Length: 111
Length: 114
Image 1 (cartoon, each protein chain N blue to C red):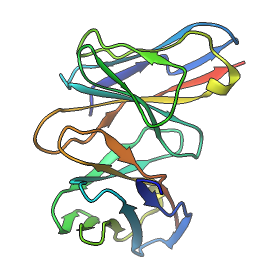
Image 2: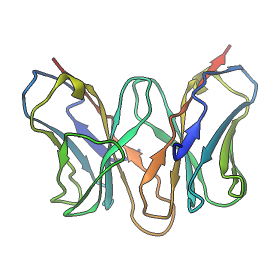
Image 3: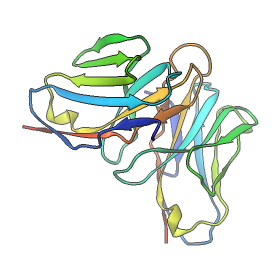
Image 4: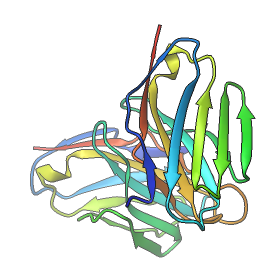
């Protein structure tokens, strides 16, 4: 079992709709959770991070964390064609520990 | 924008050559990482460092080696390049300590061994 798992997609979403991405992790000791976006041929860039159970909103993005169920999700509201990218979930056991990445979910937003 | 730099951006080299991929960051981060990523595939951690004179192998076995003599510099070396080493290599850094530990990535080096 991989430490961090994501559906590889592609997740096809109409423009203006909500894209919902999920990520599960195996280590219950994980404490920090990150969502990165990676455009084709580019480096990953951080979208947001979350540490506590519940929701965290930043603009059109909302991260949701459920430690009991060991999953973290990302919602993209009002999806735009520019949101078409691969979204990587990353997990860290504790502050200062190495990040473990999932395989990423490819999102395609169609006009 | 994160201040982490990788050189060269692109490298085409012959089999058997020794190569060094450079990575430098100006953020004073203690932790640095090397990831390998094939096109359309996932990131694989191949090396990381918690600070000067500290290096560890990552989750993916790699024939490369790294060194960390200075905080800001984390070069990766392949003693004898092979076509199987063709890939994109991404360097990243993060703070060490309490608080969030997001990694900042360099622009990557796309290596082709012919």
